[in-house]
Length: 258
Ligand SMILES: Cc1cc2nc3c(=O)[nH]c(=O)nc-3n(C[C@H](O)[C@H](O)[C@H](O)COP(=O)(O)OP(=O)(O)OC[C@H]3O[C@@H](n4cnc5c(N)ncnc54)[C@H](O)[C@@H]3O)c2cc1C
Image (cartoon, rainbow, N blue to C red; front, side, top):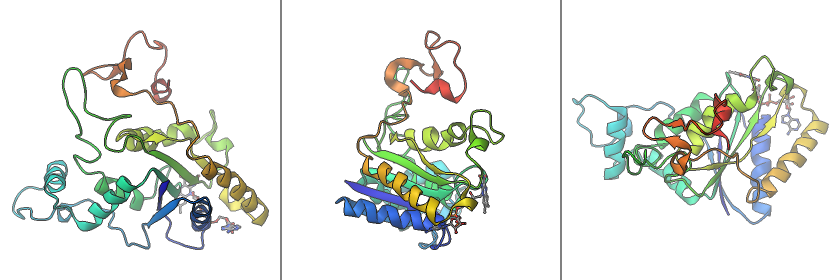
């Protein structure tokens, strides 16, 4: 299996750095091919702007979507974007490794998605009609691939529980799992989380390696989060609301799980 690890931490000697190195070793030892996009080490440009599209008229108004569409279709994207897209095509499984910063991914990783997920590659794919609303939410160019988050948090597990002050971790990660990963087609595996990082010592670190190692060993067989497919009959198109007869009392993020 080909595994791409997209890693966002500025310090190689961090907990995240250790876990990334561990994951590379574990996956390679199991015979997998591994590539790492170490975004800080790559000095990844986080902001999407006009320079991402080559050959554009500098006088023309910059349109982030339409310029992305033209550049992607013409093969005239910035080379760093095209290289990351090629890694995604290569990968069977993508692991995103990052510390939770302000309840989501670090800005450098958000910028990776904004730039690499071009129009025609990750969105704006497929037929849009009264019967279909594009290839997305379970369909699209990244369908058939798996993705998993490995996330560390300063907060305690209880802070992220159903009634915890931070909100349930499933809800906080829903925009990444569903909006960023399931949208272009990924099957999304349950995340691996390390809570309360300030308490990680050698003993707890050893336990984390055991748990993460088991998750890595089972990447190909772990059941994905059962998100509903947009074009699978559960939603009215084009309103894209759940059909009335489907769990009428359900609302919020959890309604989009089968
Ligand atoms: C801008 C910002 C925003 C934040 N927002 C949030 C938020 O919204 N929610 C939240 O919960 N938290 C938040 N935090 C906290 C953040 O999530 C944690 O600081 C982060 O997850 C810790 O990961 P790290 O890799 O930086 O850990 P490190 O600080 O590098 O390490 C944590 C502990 O692990 C130990 N350790 C590291 N490597 C090893 C090893 N190989 N063996 C044994 N022990 C090791 C270290 O000694 C240390 O005690 C935020 C932090 C910042 C800076």
